Length: 478
Image 1 (cartoon, rainbow, N blue to C red):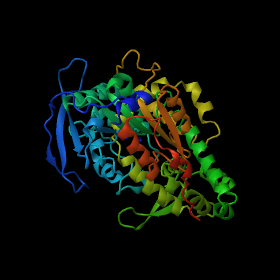
Image 2 (image 1 turned 180 degrees about the horizontal axis):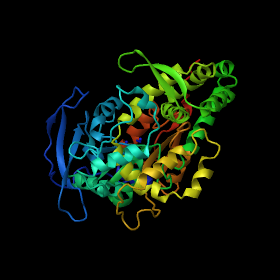
Image 3 (image 1 turned 90 degrees about the vertical axis):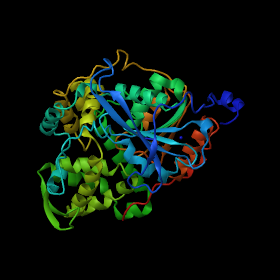
């Protein structure tokens, strides 16, 4: 679920290339529009692509486009194309957040809905939970039976074998050309970094710079390493609490407390109550071991929410699971609602899960609080998912000289810093930053200033990165 000209002599010194914003007359008509949550008037349009790009006929998919105009334009630096994560998040729904981040202060920002996420091609699956079924929010996600029912329904309307990152990369490049841009800047977080890397692989000549947070390269075979990443993030959280005097004094044994609570969950679901997310009324639920473990993992996506976990574990150890379950439902309810799960299955099944061997599961999940259930469930549901035809060399390594800033959080439960180092190894003009106390896709005033400078100069060697060393994690809840 990831994420910015100087003179020619500076470009040659740093390996960057001066940007030329437009290469041809645009072929997409954008009109004034208003987007939910945004006061400003934006520009919107639609670009049709073939669902089956290989045969170039049949059903067409209307990809919605939103352009957020720069407040102080610098056309020579190129626009920012923002790629969302998931996979399955809808890019054009992120406009309000991008305006708030200041990314459009100096650059036009372009949002293009990935195939499978927007109106006319939305691969939605019914959620396991709802406000009429609060207990469903605590069911383990990636349920094979539910995914199979969703697949059968979606197959009536779509050719699910055509929804791949490879196809989206070519869709995106068609949009770039149709909008008249030569070079663009990429910004992405989480699984959006994977799509960005695949775009760079295919069309690096048209990428001026890239800013990518919480890296997911091909080597990170989602979800094989999720349990390992979640345990490492929790261990780092333990360590940071030990080093913070107030947290250590309040929760001196929370490693042991966590193990005690996990052991109690292993004996069977725990009955408790939560506040209904809409009415506020007390509602009875049962918290299972899988729901507990997944909730801890999802809470750690947010650096602030992660720092509530010692307090919530202390309450649970005393026998009061209501505060933990309450926080779990509010977190999970928001987390899984934002993804079109049909696309998530199409991409992960064909591009990641298919490369996991059964004998790898136990070593990859051994000793983790999350365990092996997530990998096994996802492998089970993927058996029936339609197969995608990918390019012959799709999984082979590549190198790129694109100027790139890579950002990782040291308590990221899904994409820890090791994957940033992996990407840096094949991108020699990349610099990798690790945010202390940062969860998934960390973003703050420091990283925003680095992002803006990257997109301004299109290079990495001249960036001022000194603010990273001054960052401190948020305090723990006591």
